[in-house]
Amino acid sequence: MTRTESKFTSVEICAGAGGQAVGLHEAGFRHLALIEIDDNACKTLELNKEKRGWDDCRVLKRDLTQLNPRTLGLKRGELDLLAGGVPCPPFSVAGKQLGPDDDRDLFPTMLDLVDFLEPRAVMIENVRGLLEPPQKFHDYRENVIKRRLMEAGYEICMWEVLEACDYGVPQLRPRAILVAMRPEFAKHYEAPNPENSKMRTVGEVLRTSMRKRFKDDGSDGWEAAYRKWYRQAKQGIAPTLVGGSKKHGGADLGPSRAKEAWKALGVNGLGVANDPRDCDRGRDLYSDRGPMLTVEQAALIQGFPANWKFAGRKTAAYRQVGNAFPPPVAKAVGIQIKQALEAGLKARPEAAQEEVLFDLVPGPSAPLRAELADCGSDLERASVG
Image 1 (cartoon, rainbow, N blue to C red):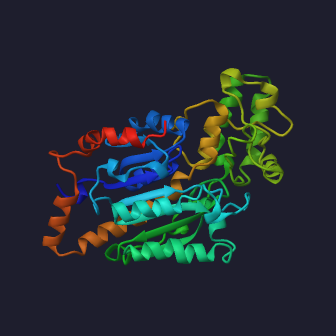
Image 2: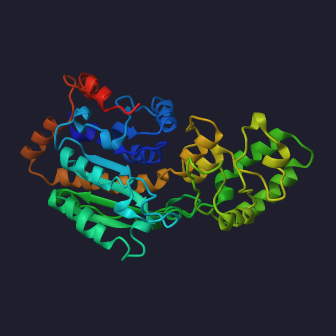
Image 3: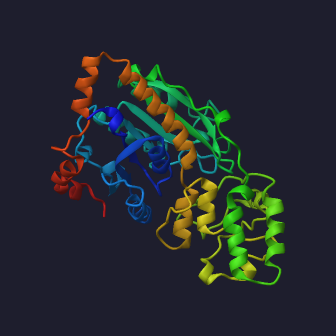
C-alpha cells in the first residue's frame, strides 16, 4: 500500500462542530480522532461522520488537559497532521486578553501533544488578537510557542492572519493560522493564495434557502419581500458571526455595530430564527429589520456544507456554528500542507520512501480501530464525563 493510495492522517483537538475537520477532509486528510469536550459538539460530529465516510475516525469527548495521548494508539512520528483551534478567549480583543495567565489557554497542552506524537505537520488556529497588535503577546509567541516548536525540530512555515472572505466565505472573519512542519517538508510549503478564490456575497450564498423560507410561508407578498431582501443581501459580505458564551443570554448575531451591518444586508441580527415548523412570521421573516437567519443559514455563512447537521437546541446549535472555523479556510491551508507532505516524501530516496510508507501507513493486520479498542480502559480513565 502506498501513500498515494491513502489519505494523509490527522488528529484534531478542540474540534468543535467540525468546521476545520470538514475543510481538512476536503483537502485530503483522513481523520483518526476528533477531540472535543462539549457534549453537543461531540453529538454533532457523531451525527455527521458516517455520512462523510469517516469510518476510521473516533470522536473523543475529553478534557484536553486530562487526555492521555497513549490512548490515541499512535507511534511517535506516525501522524501526518496534528491540528486544532485552541480556545480564543485568552487572546480575543472582546475579552480581557490575559493570554498565558488565562486558565483556558491550551497552547501548552497542544505543544505537549506535539512533543509526544511528533507529527510531520502542526496547524493551530486562533483569533487575530494573538498577533495584533504585535507587541501584546510578542514574548509568548516568540519565547514559548515558537521556541518550543523549534526545539522539537519544527520550522515555522507561516503564522499570519487569513481573512475568510478571501477564500469564498461571505463573512469578515480574520483568523491567525500557524503552520509548522519538519524541515524536509517545510521547504516545500507555500501559503495559500487568496487570488485563487472568488469572493461571495450573503445574497449569493443564502439565495436558495431564503427564497424557500419565504415561499414555504406562503403569505401574500412573500415574493416581493424576498426580492427586497435579496437586493440588499447581494450587496456585500457579513460581519463576523459570534457564538457567544454559555454564560451570556441567547443567540444573536453580535454586538450593536454588527447588528447594524446585518440590517444593511436585510437581516435581523437581534436573534436567530426558530425552526420553520415553529416559525413566528412577524419575528422570523417579516420584521422591520428583515428576516432572521436560521441555524442552517448561519452555517452556510460559515462555509459548512448544506447537509451538515447540528445537535442540540437552537441556541446550543447556533453557538457551535458561531464558534466554528470556516471549512473553506481550513481546506485552503490543508491543501498546502498536503502538497508539502507529498513533495517532501517524493524528494526522499526511493528506499527511504518505501521504509516510511510501510512503517507508517496502518495495514490490514493492525487497523487503528483495533489499537484504540485495546486502549478502552485508558480512555475511560481519561474521560471527564
